[in-house]
Picture 1: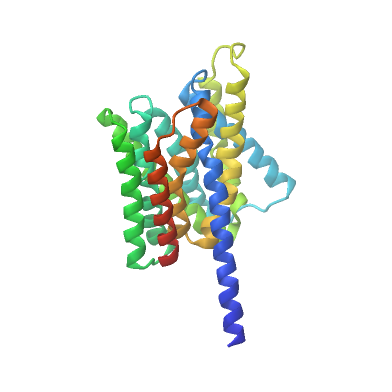
Picture 2: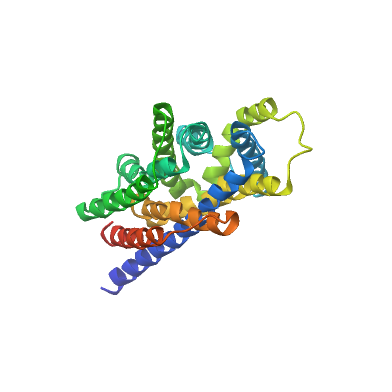
Length: 297
C-alpha cells in the first residue's frame, strides 16, 4: 500500500511540475505577439520568420556541441523533421503570411483552436485517452476564445483563413510530436535538433530575404527580433515540451487558451493598447475551463 501511495505521489508531483513548466512556456510564448508587432514595423515578416529560426538554430547547435549531446537515433529523425516542419517553419511562416490579409482579432480565433488541435494530435500521436468531460471543457474554452475574438469584429480574406488553419494544424502536430519525443530525447534537445535540421534552409532564406541595409532599424525592433529568436523560438519550447511530456499533451496543452489574453495584457502594457472588462471576464471563464480540463484529463 505504501509503495502504491509513493508511486501516486510521484505521479502527482510530475503532473504538477508539467503544469508549471507548461505555464512558463505559455508566458514566454505570450511575449511573441507584442514583440512581433514591434518587429514587423521595420522587418519584413518573412525575413523575421527565417531570421529568428536561424539565430535560434545557431544557439541550439552551440548548446548541443557544448553539452556533447549524441546524435538522435535513426527512428527519431522523422519525428524531428515533423517538429521542424510544424513549429520551426510551418507555424511561423504560415502565420506571417496570413497576418498580411487577416486582422489580429481573426488570428485569435484560430489560436483559440490550437489547444483543441494539440489535444487531438496528443490522442492520435501520443496515445493519450482523456476522459469525455475533458473534451467538454476543452471545446468550451476554445469557444470562449473564438467568441471573444469574434466580438471584436472580423474581416479576412479566404486565403488568410486557410493559411491560419494550416498553421494551427502544423503547430498542433509539432507540439504533440515534440512532446512525445521529449520523453526519450529530452525537451531542450528536441527543439535544438529540430532547429539544427532546419538551419541550412533558414540560413539561406535569411540571406535571400535580408534587407539591403540595417542602418535604419531601431533598438526596439532589434530587441524584439532578439526576443522572438531566443525566447519564442528556443527557451519557450524547452519549458513547453518538458511540460507536455510531464503533464500530458492534451491536458497541459489547454494552457494555450490563456496565451491570447497574456499576449493582449503584454500588448496593453508595452504598446498601451486598451484592455476591456469583457476581456477580463472571458479570461476568468477560460481559466475555469483550463482548471476543469486539468481535473478530468
